[in-house]
Image 1 (cartoon, rainbow over the protein chains, first blue to last red):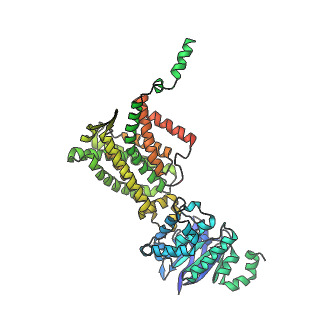
Image 2: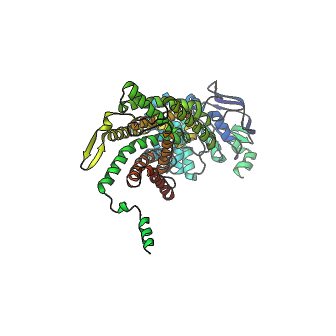
Length: 236
Length: 309
């Protein structure tokens, strides 16, 4: 059964429709990528799922229950954590405080110290810098901190918006390896990426978004072999 | 020639400044510092509200005057000493602040600044005029046995009322920083102040945190008002003056900085006290505004200016 299901979702900013008629599913345990160029509607789709934007039409279901129209704090309470574009940390607070703030729900708060240990296990660098202010971290460390903060909510679905943005290739590799590990450990992942090749190599399935609609979808191997994708996104 | 010489002498900065009586200076600094605890508490309330909501609370001084009247009512009707009654005043203002945020401020949190200013000025006017209707225009003062007592530290005179006011204000400031740095709600307030969107993304109930921040800010100024009621005669228009002093302190300390509001409160109070002694009591504001201008010239973001608490 699908953990997340979008059915004919339309999202608009005022009169400007950013996403129209998007339907997609993410199954439990999957790692699904949404790829596409700038302005294709990827971020808007994630924000609609998170309750940060209200869809104008369509339904969003999580674990069988409708979640469109809920507030973002309710959506987090249902078990969806969002690592936003640009990381959006609390720069004048310590790494530890940033992480602890991620444990918002009662269940997450009860398990806080244990989750913290596993986050430091995943990103040892964060453990070393736990007393440092988040604003003083490097870009890659900030991305780790943002992912760690989302994991502190003990999500069943982890959504990431452009985690590779502005990072050195080595750091992108490290972050993606960690995402694969988080997924192997049982968390469902929905990844939005402009770095199409990396995203396709990592995911099980992907949706290609163009101008607010789904242009193509399929398992990773089929998309990696697709001539149109090679031409448009992979540059060969 | 002789006239030129005299003009030269007149222009010398404060002739008495050259032959300052050290006891007088220490006296002015001590009494300014002791009064400053209240200024700090008042400014911390304003900076907390601004930090979390980016809304400037133009009704801040009027809330404080209401707390002074509450202390006065407590003392005159129920015989409650203001040094005890400040707890009640703070609690009442906490509730009032929560209600004002939920019913009014919440509607304009995302509005342009000029609309926010209109609403907050409206709240200030309503508060000031209801105080005028309820209590009349005569200046009031709360009497407590403590203000009659004094200590002598050598040649320096310490007013016991000011000392207690200062001690309580400092204790409340410490309690507030413990709350903001150690408690979960307090950390959420700092998180919203630091990055409101980031806080929303991780599931913080920003509306609830904002209402609580406004309530805590109002409670701070409520405690400050009750504590200062025995030291400062007040009437309904005093609110505007206190609002302006609060803004002055917050800008000197750096918008949104708690440490800045604390240090700024002490600094402005000492400056006013020195100004009152060495210039003229009615010119004390001149000194604190001159301080503001100098600080803005040297450090435009304020003493501890950053973008968040």
